Length: 73
Image (cartoon, rainbow, N blue to C red; front, top):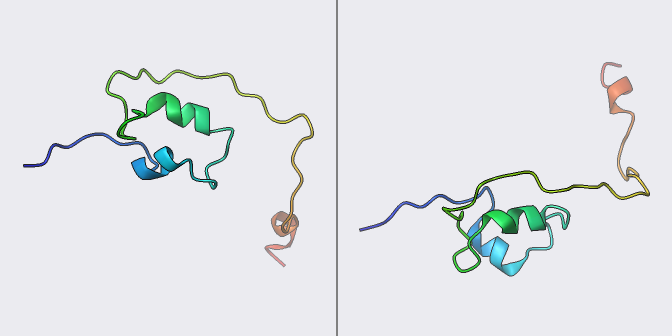
């Protein structure tokens, strides 16, 4: 008695609640593919690229950045 439906790689309830761990830069892309009522993949969605721009300030690391040189020693 169940109907199988496609879902995105994020659970529907996390899309609907707007979980804080989802990168805010990805949220518009995910919401474009999700049905707002169910959180499942929209059947009529045609995945196409959306404009993307990284922040101008660049990225800074808060963890170890030397593993690529020290992993073998």
